[in-house]
View 1 (cartoon, one colour):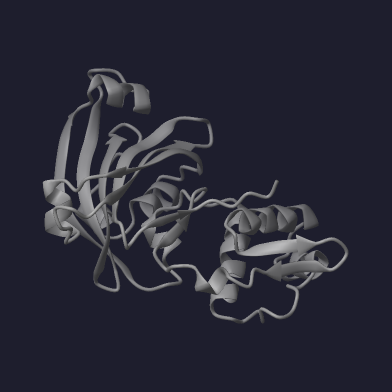
View 2 (cartoon, helix red, strand yellow):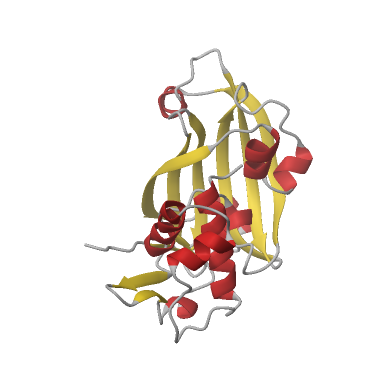
Length: 238
């Protein structure tokens, strides 16, 4: 289960995307939201901070919290740099997310992979590649490693739907953070085949480690996006 403030932030985001909250007016105040969601004002403040980090809203001292005017103009392909919920949850308000399994193996990790996942040389990992599609259109190609001992019983249905949902709902593991490096690459053969990239098309790669709440690495992945189907939103509130 996700933390309560995350669940509330997702619901408020859904309402913003569906224009249930008008862009010209402030959002309901924290006391009203706390009463509606049957929670504390502190939890609502955490939810609002999450939405601020994602670039959806901003605050005005003494006036309230407002929807950013340019939010609905952002590309549907873009994802917040702080996001670590997986493609299914990230784009659930945009359209149907589906997955095609390109490869699934069980093997031992290389030295770099061991360091990223904090596993030993004799501990097996899942090694799988998935093509993620949004409304049937290729969005990303994900090369993922996960320790078998952390995610027992991973099967085809999980890979074709949502691995993170299985991790959080069935295995009751709490995902709490990520470390990411973003770079531009030339397309590999699999990018050309599954993302329909030309030889000269640049590819956006997000190399990431996803962590559980106790700091244990859950996933080490390289996610590839077409140059015109990927962007990372970074919001500075300095």
